[in-house]
Amino acid sequence: MFPEYRELMTKLKAENDLHFTKLFDEHNQLDEEITNIENDPVQAVSRESEIESLKRKKLALKDELGRYLATKA
Image (cartoon, helix red, strand yellow):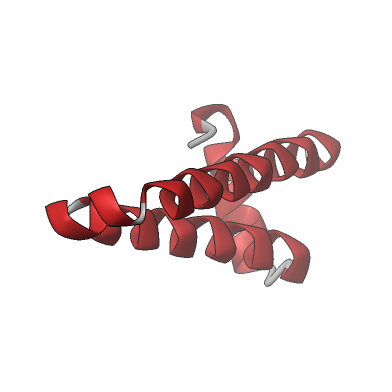
């Protein structure tokens, strides 16, 4: 995610930028949750609408992260 900002992301993590860390951690948590649900075929089918909702939240966080990184660059 955001290879063009890799150094900046490392810097923000090292500086304990709370806003960045919150967004980054939330995005990764959603990614893990989606992956776990999708890896279980029974859950993936029965929770399809939830998966789509989680993916929309994840995308919104990614957009917010991108805007935040652009302001810090």
